Image (cartoon, rainbow over all chains, first blue to last red):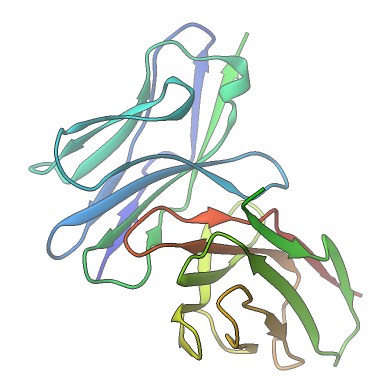
Length: 113
Length: 111
């Protein structure tokens, strides 16, 4: 079985400050890890993924995430938050043989001016 | 443009009625997925298909049915057996092991 936990329902940061959205996972074998963003009444958009290689992954819109195998975490980060980053963020995991991904419950990020 | 489309954007269902949500992709992806999203909640997998003419139940398949007769198309039927169908429905596709591409969603409301 595979599972994802996003421990924070809500994250609030001030514009210009760094942001972190947390994700931990459980999966047998090697994980494929993904971050997606959803704006109101829209579908999800892919931000970045970890398949193999460098533990620090860079993605769209200045976001990055660090894969930590010992802590089974894949936290999303951005050095300087923008008001336009305010949205719902989902972490997802699948193992190399699974036909489907498992999504976390989502974290609402609010960036205040 | 390559992408994934869903129609209609809004759909209203009367009690006891079956309705079908359309999902089409021109990305040449083998895998397609249907998710349900309720307000303030995450995504729950309804059905998925990894190849034409084959599909598997997800976590909440009861009251739903699908078909995969063509690679490009994966329609979802919400049957009268689904007692609480009001939700936002998202379709997605992917090539094996890679990220999913999502459609814009269909919002279904029971009258």
